[in-house]
Amino acid sequence: MAWADLIILIMVVLVLAGAGAALFLENLLGAAVATALVSLGVSVFFVILRAPDVALTEAAVGAGLSGLLLALAAKRLGLWRIEVQQDSEDAGDSSC
Amino acid sequence: MSEFALLTLLIGALSLIAIGIGGLVLSRNLFRIVLALSLAEAGANLLLVLVGFRRDAIAPIIEQGHALTATMVDPIPQAMVLTAIVIGVGVQALALSLAIRAYVAYGTLDMNVMRSRMETDISDAAGAQPATSQHAPAGGRPLPPISAPRLAHNKGAQG
Image 1 (cartoon, chains in turn blue, orange):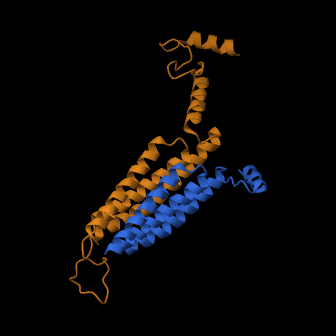
Image 2 (tube, chains in turn purple, brown):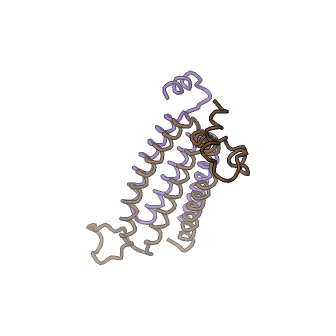
Image 3 (tube, helix red, strand yellow):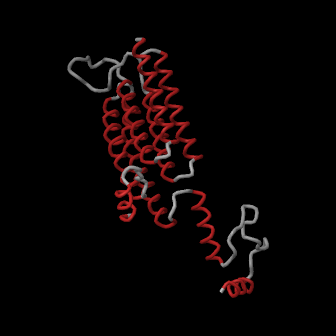
């Protein structure tokens, strides 16, 4: 039982760190990925709380579909600023 | 599932709601406000499932191995949360589309810049000077509402 407690404690700390990263990261695309990661961790908590159907939906819809929506909206808003690829950034800005 | 683990999950769910609401109130970027809304929603879902938990119970699914009278966790919050997850993604899609429309209209995602541009537009439509600060909302205009001749005079002076 002590091992299970430790694993749950570490998972809670990781999820809260992901929530803080979603609020404080400068890169907004990274913040969107952190939000999807928080959703994935919460789905693990649902499995632990014996709600496997909710965990399935949260992982597929909350992490997958929501992350896809956020990434597409970030592309439309011109937030895909990756410093390494200057050419693709210009192309993305002109397509908006 | 020990007492400590349940308490940890409860604190985690409440902290997630607090972080989400704090980001919702304190952020200035529209995209980050949508992210904070998603965080608060995940915390609320976790809290609801945690409320329906029972100790030493099985998942609310009838299987071959378990007796029909076995103790199950409460299935009602789980069904509600299942609905709330899907509705949350719909709300998020709506908020993102509104943010995209606001970005197209005002050219920025920052709430402060957007508010100043919006006030400039409203002042232009009303024919008044734009605001210079929060303490002079109409930019030196006297406090009573302007009358029609003065409005015409202002328009003539500007044109």
